[in-house]
Image (cartoon, rainbow over all chains, first blue to last red; front, side, top):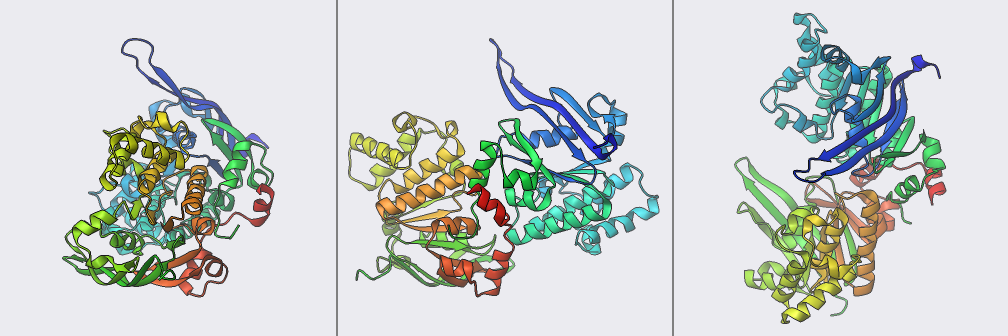
Amino acid sequence: MSARDVLVDVQDLRKVYRTPGTFGKGTEFVAVHGASFQVNRGETFGLIGESGSGKTTIGRMLLRLLEPTSGYIEFDGYEVLTLTRPRLRALRRRMQIVFQDSGSAFNPRLSVGEQVAYPMRKFGLYPKGEVKARVIELLEKVGLQAEQAQRYPHEFSGGQRQRLGIARALAAQPDLVVLDEPTSALDVSVQGQILALLREIQAERGLTLVLISHNLAVIQHMCDRAAVLHQGEIVEQAPVDELFGSPRSEVTRELLDAVLEPVLP
Amino acid sequence: MTNEPLLKVTGLRTHFSSEHGTVKAVDGVDFQIERGGILGVVGESGSGKSVTGLSILRLLGSRNATIAGGQILFHGEDLLTKSDREMREIRGKQISMVFQNAMTALDPFFRVGDQLVEVIRLHQRVGKREAKLKALEAMELVRIPEASRRLSSYPHQLSGGQRQRVMIALALSCGPDLLIADEPTTALDATVQKQIIDLLAEVNRELGTAILMITHDFGVVARLCRTVAVMYQGKIVESGDVATVLEKPEDPYTQKLLGSVLRLRSEVRRVSA
């Protein structure tokens, strides 16, 4: 694999939380323990694990929404962790995130159209007169309607809010989108629609996705490769067919065994 | 008399009134559970499944909720005609309930042992010492390791799975005939969910406690339940034994719902099994 095919290169990433000891030493919690992985251009890379395994912490560190304690992150040849603020800001346009509950990631007092327009304006992606048309185009792309641009976040259902979160992430024209449990709060019928939308957009735009999920079926349907996390460590990473077909770690086997499917045993 | 179902709900209607009109959350629902049976009530958010569970125990607190009609026969007696006082006797003792979020259902200021003792002494005429023994039995029943030490733990000192075990211990402490479980494993990790579901199956087998499992997850139904009712917009659209509904669903909504569940590809299941 040539370096040009790798969009994100993560080496020995660590995050340690320290509680200050007023007297004495305080305690340490290692949330991520030396994680290394690479994400190729245009692929979907999965991060799997149970609660507390460190998957969300890694997702946030990739975008430097959270400062790593140590390690190395390269994004398209840039060293993310040593960038100065202005240069980081420019890079941020290219790396976006969608959260589990997009509703709470929107400002309740601004119309959603305004908020989808924000990244376009902020990064000066279009001439002023063109922004409105682009917002509407994007809303329609994610399955919403033009007139919904004037509405406020609370007027949307859970599935629609996730569509809005995706629209806002796409507004910045990113190369990489981190999806943190994007369908975990949704009903199953809506989950399928959102995943289909993500695949469609990815194919159209050649996006690179990092998908964080505890749901193995979602990972299998969406990802090319995935890493399994356990207590802050990557215990295994492989192409998903290999990972699920012949899991090498006990952790992966246990996760697979715990999947309850709608078939009789 | 012995063939009579433990719980027989007919024509249940629960309505919420708001300034925008009446919402028929439960709109004419019929189902029954045999003694020792396990029924799954499945549906998506807003289908009325939780309101159905709360209606049985008449736990709809808010003033704008009314049970507008129907019958809830428990041991042949209609719960809707019981006085508040009679209902208090039934709740916890004959029918008990566990919820999704055990953390908010437990009192953070009291040790779990004291909370168990309180429930036991509320419903049974026993002294403190005997209540403590029963509390310990309940903790052992739900397989909490080092049960006697855990009695003096506060809720926040327990993991999510252990808290849900404590909730189940509380619910079972007075030997109810029916346990209503409303999404008890939805907030838990998959590995812990499976343990809790299997615990409920064991409790059902060993004590004969009937279970009404309210869930959005057909996987939970497949592992635990014997019969299932699928709810949609306040109505039961299909019901029957689990094998039939899962393998040959007749109702279009059930088919759609089952069809939208993502499954691990079969070759993968074979390898992992």
